[in-house]
Image 1: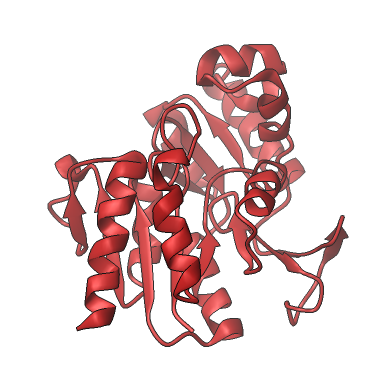
Image 2: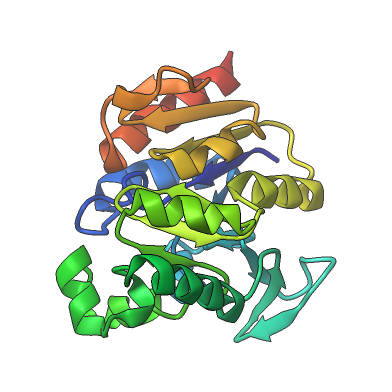
Amino acid sequence: MNIIFTDLDGTLLDSDYSYSKAEDTVKEIKARGIAICIVTSKTFQEVVPLWRELKLESPFSFENGQGIAAPEGVLPEVDDMVEEFEILSLGPNYEELEKAIEEVEDELGDLNRFGDMEPGELADLTGLSEEESEKALERMHSEVFVPDEKAAKRLESKGYKVLEGTDFFHLQGRPDKGTAVRYIKDILDPDVTLSIGDAENDYPMFKETDYSVLLGAERSEDVEAKKIEKKGPEGWNEGVKWFLDKLDL
């Protein structure tokens, strides 16, 4: 078995949160028996509809490696069941993170963060629909806020990690996308692996796979990955086809 570990925003999904331009490539991957494992900053509730639409069967990771979900009977360790999915928690719970944020806000002032927003506000900020925004607010192990360097440093001084995503900062525990990729690899024992993403929070998973692709390569001088200037599904298609060519050598 070979696996493609893929980010979503700015990678498989375009600015309208659509993968339509990558549909043919997805079909080719599946026809070749290659598994697609989503590894994203999105929440569990955001990923599930896409996972079902793509008719995937493999585990996926949500909230930047803070949690892993899989169909029943796949994970060796299970903390919870949500619908038909087993859930393994790798990071701290949301309540712990919220307490840390409140301490920093007492010192530096309020952050512009998801947890204080109504679905309509988040929709205006992100371009998500209100229904999608409700799912984005159902966070288990991370919080998201508009970039604030000073607050990020204070939160990191408390032992947490702040990662730079495509548009926002992500507060979480020490596990990351690389942690999740390692765990899924241990379960599935793949032959050859690819990771593909577009932002700093994707870099940890690049270190855990045989091949890696970075989309939107303008700030990537120190990253060891195949660099493709395009982002979104067009860049994703190019990166995946480069990987498939490697498999055919």
